Image 1 (tube, rainbow over the protein chains, first blue to last red):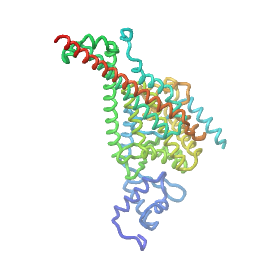
Image 2 (cartoon, rainbow over the protein chains, first blue to last red; image 1 turned 180 degrees about the horizontal axis):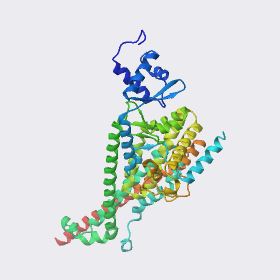
Image 3 (cartoon, rainbow over the protein chains, first blue to last red; image 1 turned 90 degrees about the horizontal axis):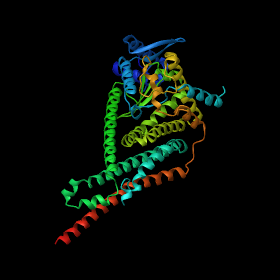
Length: 124
Length: 349
């Protein structure tokens, strides 16, 4: 059920908007959070319906948190993409020129040093 | 000038002297200048030195060619003058030709590798889910990186998102966005190519990898308005990643930290745990790039001194003077031979 102001659109386009919202979110979203992130003005129940349908189709995974579910995107290609990314990352001798990684695994010495640096900063 | 024949004009050594100087100052440059200036200056130094050393080798090789009997026959110039007045010994010229060939081969190899890596990453980017800048991969490994391209993408694993709070996630995103926006991979590629031509420049190429990371760190700190927060985000991500690598793979089976096996893929280690090898051969007892990045964020931003930039500009000029002076010598040699030829012709008539 859509709100009175919202234009009618095909169900598929709503679904892909919800998918985009899930994919851009940093963490799994509750239906209310999805609703906030959509450009379309949809009723809460509509969002829940779309999410439930996406879950049934295997497009979204959900986990129970408190009284509501949190949804995250499932993409069949994601696993493949991840594997290919790792191949690129590890297989190329010049990967540093291509992929700028946020952090690398630390050596034992670096790990100790880093912990000392951060502890000094924030003893909490 | 016979005593110089085993040698060459001393100016010819300038680009190589500057390369060695670059080796020594690469690290201080990347740490003591603001990261953006450091990146630009190191890149300029590497490119100028690579060009200067290549030109030097070319002129030296050319001085060898003009001393060949075939050159004298072909041009009709007197061989005894060409050989007698040349300041480069045939041995030096031969070595220069070998070095020149090696440099060209090195450059070709790196160019092919970069192209291949580029294509592989472009393919991988096409497979990424979503349309926007950020692609979240459903993967427990704590990882995040930027992939340049048209358009570039930022890849973040769900494992990484799970260990950072919302503010730290903003740091991560701003950091990776900065890599793409400021085109850091261009600086890395250019210095990598310079180091392929002249292996003495490798420390400069490594310094640019570091200074571009610092550049992105400072951009991220700017974006969130808090350098300590940026330091914490980096630290938390790195420590989580390391802890994860240790639990996936007991420490006893990973290579001891000091051997830093560069290209040896250890069996059974999950692929991303090999990130240990990515830092390049830093000296074992020195802190690696990550603690240095975190420390840099906790300290004030370095001021723009004048000493280091001036040193670099002077070094670039010195490096370029080398091949220029050698080329003048070569011109004098040929002109001298022409003059000698005219004298010979004159006396024959």
